[in-house]
Length: 559
Image (tube, rainbow, N blue to C red; front, top):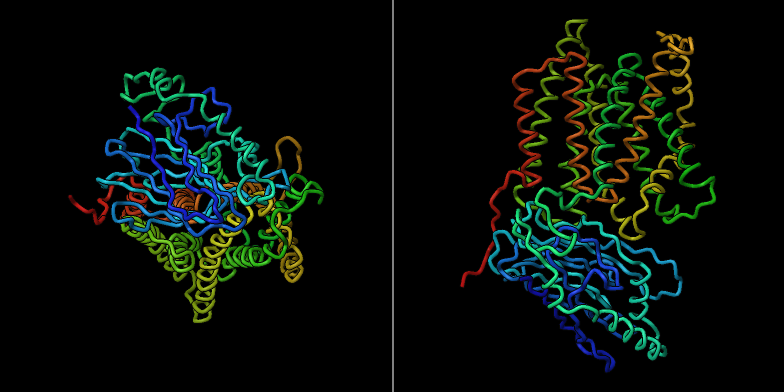
């Protein structure tokens, strides 16, 4: 039997309006108000709170008491507040601040802009759970679902995309923040909505349920919970992750081939990538300049400057004899820089196991790259020795990589903040961050022209079907550009589905795979230290994802 999610609000009364209206009712598949597509839940309850006021009320506390036998609660919150603060446990311990995803509205007369939050709360290790959401929303629509299953290894997450009926949400949210002169119209809509909610009784829902013989979980109709089904990754996220590994790893492969033929071709590579992605975006994203922007050019300015700086630095450092392996390890340290900036700027807090796993991943990649770079230095010394000037410019290249590392992490946080304010627009951001910096390449035109002409003086490859000889550098450059296009599209899509820290984790793993492939394919040495680094990286990754569980330390009040 599935109990209802209990919600209550302690708003004060403002202007004589009653703010304590609370409705919790069970929904059926035939309900005309479209529910979230929760395929992994046992049953659903919805609580709707309304408020009539012109000005936002003081922050209210929306509390949920979850019965002991239920291990997970999945909630979808729709309200007019851009963020909520989560407090969990009997002592109401602060957990995190969650920013909602803006729901785009087509009707310009809607006075309140709705935001949506999707959350899963894992009660593992907590005997008595009370979830409190602090928000100043004028109205709240809550969808609640409880899972009587094993604890969710991912804890609290906000990455559960579920389709909503936007038209219905807009109609609901027209009530909050409206002019009080339209009170009669609002009351009529309120009564209409209330009548739609009362189409199903809890008894009918219980009768329609049956027990799954494998999971021993109550399911209704075709709805149920599968232990083998991933709970937190949407199809869009999975495709984006696949694109990151395929496109980015291929891009690094072609990049290393290019660097071996022409170490100074970094600016040429960067310019080609920017031109190709900007041209593709002008056709398909901007629709030849006819599409309206979601984010203003002013807001893009800082993001564009940081993206251009990191792209140029990351490709230009090969001019300073920085080996590819060292290049990968320094860029792989972005997980630590992202966590440091997230703690400092966004005031985020992370579990101790996450800090440990991040250190393990970074140390593992560092070990692999350090010994690879030491072997590289030994080979260079055997070929003719090094001078103080070589060491100086090598250090300049390393410092440029470190600078690009922190700028890139801050850029990820800036993207996240822009998406919170304007909604998710990954394709637009991808287009403008590659289009707007193009004039800056005019400052590098001499260097770009020199290496472009140099490409036609090198080795060529005879195309089998066309019988045309094409310079190898041009072929590798084309492969790098196409792979980079897939890579950067996947990364920008991933930023709309996951937090900046999760994106950085995925990119760090991708860099490690590229490192191992580079060592094997280009016959770089792979010693015992490399295997030690490999173990640290994979164990750290499993710890970060909670596949390897680390006991959580919580202060729980015992009765």
